[in-house]
Image (cartoon, rainbow, N blue to C red; front, side, top):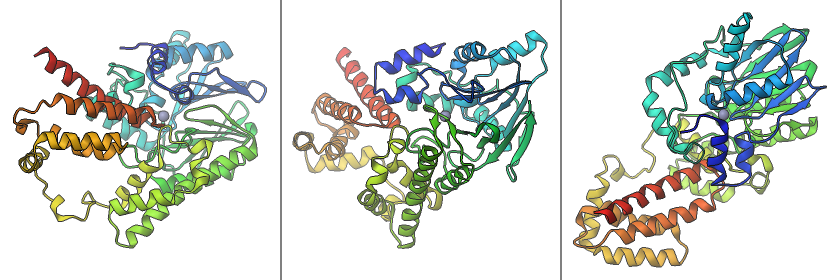
Length: 437
Ligand SMILES: [Zn+2]
């Protein structure tokens, strides 16, 4: 279990590419505008704006990063925190508030105004209702950075917003001689706010910009909004910002650079949205849509630095659009309406052919580097575990975990790597427990 950010660093170092270090905030703070605007790198980032009258924080990051972020901010300024704005209600943006509140109480300062979209409060309530489920889920999605630790969120200990916004119009306030404008768009979530500070030429985006292909269609999480995401990017473009603090990753600087990144992200979101919609209107089922979409993915998106599938990915986004407009019956094959148990289906295949034959075939697929097909064939043996007639399942398990590890090693997406490695790990511990018996 980790208590501090350095444990996250230790865990993730065991695993992967440099890219993820930027994603989880392992780089030095960045300052612009004569040291009045700062990106405090974290999981996720904090945007800090210093005014004559005090500090404005855009997000407060993950609870486990709070001591480190508090220290980093106090190195920059000793002014009181007067405003906290939540980009959205996710656990890596809103739960690292404790040291700041503790300081305010100790020094007898006034409590800060805490501003959020009204759906943030609904999300906090959802976190309470689904606490155990989210622990279980996040332990999988974030396995490589969190090790075995499970208490990522303490859903009963949230910082209650003092001002809830309905998002219909921009919310503007003046503080320390500076104007702050909070806008609402939907994208990763339906509770997002992004900040525009005209005098500083600054946008703070929250997770609407994460320096990766947008996290739309996350395999573990609820519905997200590709078209709303495209519109959010367009709305941000109108501001013509010179500095952009993303939810994850380094500060983006330069008007043209920012415009280009927002524009291509918007285009990528419209692309996936409109191409799936077109195929839905052509009466196509998911499988056909998905494989057609893989064929037509434009090179300009594939190779763009800010659309790399480090977290979200194009493949996941196709699911997101389909799911937004379609029910769960996605194959068009009536067999799938009331499917039998996987183990019963496997049993019937094992009646036709012995497990040895399936294994030999899977092995030949593996040798031909047809890894995905090999997995499907191996699953006949693994899911038919109770019908093997003396065949030792261990070799099938070993081959499956080997394939999963192989695929994980070449997967750029952090989520994909975690899913594949989790699967391999589970299989490996099954093999171990069989040996002990
Ligand atoms: Zn985030």
